[in-house]
Length: 372
Image (cartoon, rainbow, N blue to C red; front, top):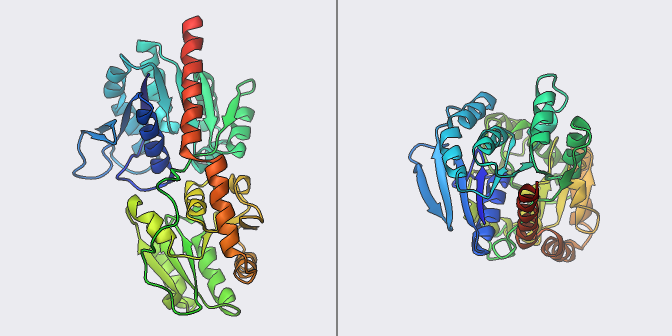
């Protein structure tokens, strides 16, 4: 089968969505399918065309990393996408901005469209007087709609009554993400290490993790490692200094995706203090590396985390976050919880299962178009 995907970002960009698309496409190639991915030339020096793990990647111009920039990229990518669509069996839009190129290309080829709504951008815009009818049009244009959490699926079905949206949690390459040799030096004797693999944007709630650190230090010896970068970094570093915990909060910055298993394996506990979230790929990757997870009770996080593999707490509440962290650190079950977390990911959310489901969907929509 010839599968044509459209996505705003693709590796070497680092992030949950980027890794999801990369690993899914790679698994499809390994199953004998041809996968082309049209994405953005998001960094200087990236090749306009290359093959990554058997995936044929095509990059087109994008002026900025914001909504107007994504929209411009979608429009300017149409000629390349439409040309590739001439030989495609199925078109897969992997983000909001990708749907329009698929609709345009479908008029040429007639191939079925699959869309996946991944992120909190969809949730934030769902009640907008401008975006709501756009989303309704997009949802009705697709032959099959997917969402990365039940919350996104529910909101999407509310926007477009009569349209079915399937909730499918993003998958993890469990052969790649597993407990391995630590990439960081051991913490001082007896000190617990918390890791937050989060880009430093307001919605990810890192401010509240830093505010929780003094409260945690009242009862436990801990340090925090933040993996990721973003516009909030300067303000967060200042906050850590103001709270007197700068020596206990380590800003590693952005790291290559290939470094993540070793970095995650250097920690005792992962923390996701999100204010808004779909289903976090980074949380699933942490669990695959045998880390229990403390997370905010928002979005799709309660769909993957419970008290057997971690703890949930209220968002934007440093005191609640500190209590949850302290309860897990003092409970004596971190290793057992981590083992169960990995087993759960392997059983329910492996990339193999995700790829198999996508193949089933592609075959269904292709057969449906042929029968119409």
